[in-house]
Length: 246
Image (cartoon, rainbow, N blue to C red; front, side, top):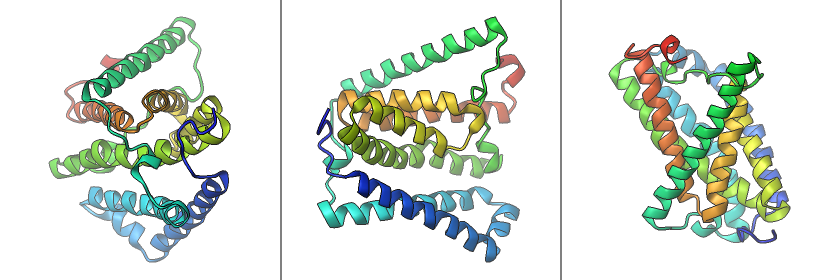
């Protein structure tokens, strides 16, 4: 569906942005390791703050080449990234419908696994992220700001506002959605749960395709991360146990 999103970026722009990020991220990690900053982070009592800074640094490295390249060639406009207002009721409706779909698919697959006893590689519980920040109140607040606030907004601008719109515009909605969801899943590097992340990516893509805006996708992403974050907090505080949930 040509010009589905009216995104001006080309495959060349996409490739250059990815290559620059692929070069700069390893270089940055090497510098952090050589300078001893990685050891400082690992041993720090306020590890969560450093993790947030690393997250921001990582996304600066990813977004800056993209923004500089696209601004130089096309000028940066919010509409190019799918930042378009839609009604709040429509937004809520899209989020609710998409989450019911996600739960339904997850329930079907889980039921199939329990009934057959078949273990599907890549369809396990995601690794807990919150404990990486620490379990004290301050660390949990920092983790919440990152996981529920910053990550959904930044990731949606890149994966749906730039990546999906480019791929769907040039290769069609179907192929563009599958490829961008696959990249989204690989990026999270949680191989034991890559399938549910891929499914989540497809569902978020469907929200953007239907609304032609990333605003509902950001809302869905925030809602999903908030639920996952709350679940992890309940596990950490031993309000619930994983054995009882499973």
